[in-house]
Amino acid sequence: MQVQFSDGQTEPATITGRDPQTDLAVLKVDNTHKFPVIALGSSSTVKVGEATVVLGAPLGLSGTVTSGIVSALDRTIQVPAENDKTALLVSAVQTDASINPGNSGGAMVNCADQLIGVPTAGATVPSPSGESGGGSIGLGFAIPVDLAKTISDEIIAIITKVNGEAATSNVQLQELTLTKKPGDQVSVEYWRNGHTTSTTVTLGTQP
Image (cartoon, rainbow, N blue to C red):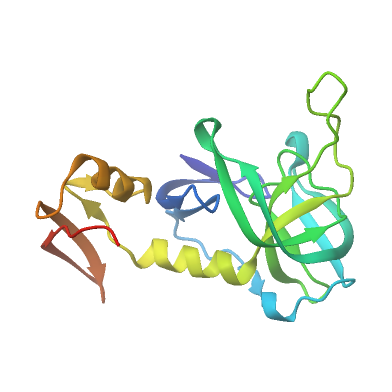
């Protein structure tokens, strides 16, 4: 996997982990350069009516910027996810800034250049035939930055291997509940304080 920066430079990257249920993933970029890092805002300070800017690559058009306002907060909606599944977006920031395919995973920022959300979905009006409509209709949603940071921090610090396999998704834990039974033992490798440690856990019953 590679990531491409706005100046066209590409760098190798690996998937540290992903959480399909919240439509988030963390990529680790392997490079020796120091890239600028966006400042993080706080979801708790976002107000309805404040100006916001969305950056991304809608329809493959990189470096696209759209503007609007925060039109609502704390929306809970289902969004398309991988393998024709859906992810549940909670506490979403709603905006009328145009969000189209390709904006997902970009940045929603405030007027202080701080990240306040991660764009993930734009609504479309269904056509009479039942197919999705055209482009943006001024109804888009972003994962609030506080939630995105919590999930990404957990992905970065969590378990590295489960049952001998690289831990890249929480789906692996769900699979264990289907393929194992209470009392079974599973090997777990985890990263703590700069060191990798292995242990064995005994599965219990689901609450």
